[in-house]
Length: 279
Image (cartoon, rainbow, N blue to C red):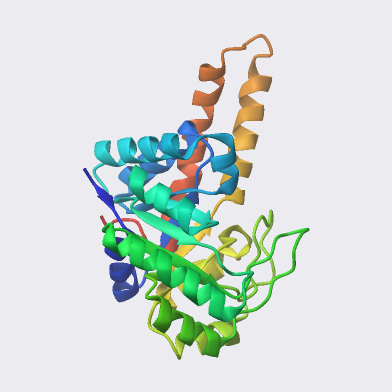
């Protein structure tokens, strides 16, 4: 079994100048393609089940699927709960065998966020798992606006919570379908100056490719969450599969046609982040 936690894959990334992608999963086909891509690239991979995925399929099924993929893989696989909403939800994920959880207290006042995150971090560490928290608020394209991370608050958050990874808001936005103008590098460098924890960028699809590559090698960002661009690749592949033969109706055959394009897109992400050859 190669099931690991963020505590296993992020410190080497920081030390050696690369980042590990946190890949947002919505079903069996993309999760399997992500692991196949990781094996082809000899790269560690973080499989993530977010709120949308958990609304679609029970948490226990995600846990079993991620653990099965990890057991069969020859590279390190992290089974990660993304945007956990409560201690109860994170605890349930840990009980089911997730090796990592993210507790999202980013909308809470600082003291409450620290208290909540510290409790989940302690719970995760007791289970041999890792914990990610968020300070500042990463907004959504077409939705809630971001609130940038304050470096002083980030330093306090990292010290008092004991998290293994800290998601920050430095111009990144969830659900962005095209690359934006880039991150607030001054804010990022100010955060790096006051903390040593591994940093996480949510909404990685909206970060320009060259900047992602640069930051993976030259910053404390050790994890980029990538979802939207891979969902777009899946949708394009599925539309091609349906259009290729309008009479074809078997869902397994149609969905299997998405796996090779998804694998190819994911391999490109590993290479751009410098993750290839690290496993």
